[in-house]
Image (cartoon, rainbow, N blue to C red; front, side, top):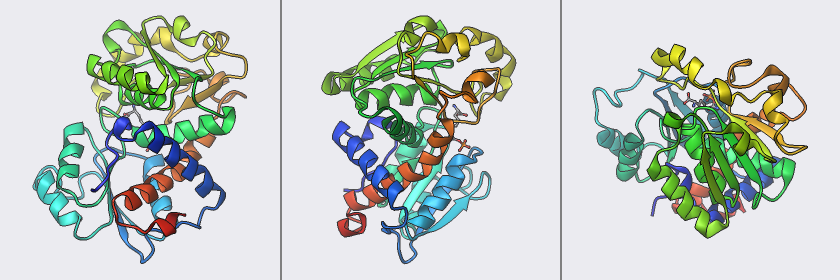
Length: 316
Ligand code: CP
Ligand code: NVA
């Protein structure tokens, strides 16, 4: 059966742990695992702009022995002249992996339904699961075991990063607290899925409008832009909405001593995060960005093996 990563809970808790452990091993030996040797081609499609995702997938695919094919917004027939299903039927005869950054989650689901090779969500309006693999790897490096650690996310709590922090966090057994204004909290279906998974892992879920409640003694503090890609028209109103949820020095004073700070980047200093925080000693954002590369390499190798498209020995 072909395996995909479309959303954070597509990995079981055990699988998440295995991918993170593989990522740490591959970080230590960057060119030891070559499931794409040949080179086989991996296609990376973008409907939205990107720096980290684009570069980390290109570099990661090369390091796995493969050849990256980057398709920028507007460069293919996908989504306007040709259906997603027809595109999948063509692509899976030519490439070994399909990575796609797009808007609707339903598009990724349709691509996966018609693809015989793994499909990876490189960010959708709903989730950013590759970013969370990198974030959890970073937390493991800095704080050790994830189970029982608390993570507070502040800001736009209805966006892709909030959803992914909630789902991936509980999948790792963490105590996840999400804080944002009343009309910008995670949808009920996301909260319900997170609560169900937390029941399996021992994690916990808090959804609140009170930033202070989320921050209280948190081991990890995370935030994201207040204006996600596709929301540019709402910029002015969004700047007013999230003011009480800024991650600044005052917010960090409520977190645990030695707490670390995550931001997926790009960041807007003085908006969702204070310069004193992102450029300060608690920030681990550059490790987090680097870990996109290591986490995604492990994910690609693992998906290929699980899908029967690479030999386990290439990942041993
Ligand atoms: N964090 C992240 O996905 O960055 P890019 O938008 O630059 O890919
Ligand atoms: N929430 C942001 C994340 C960027 C990596 C966006 O979707 O634009």
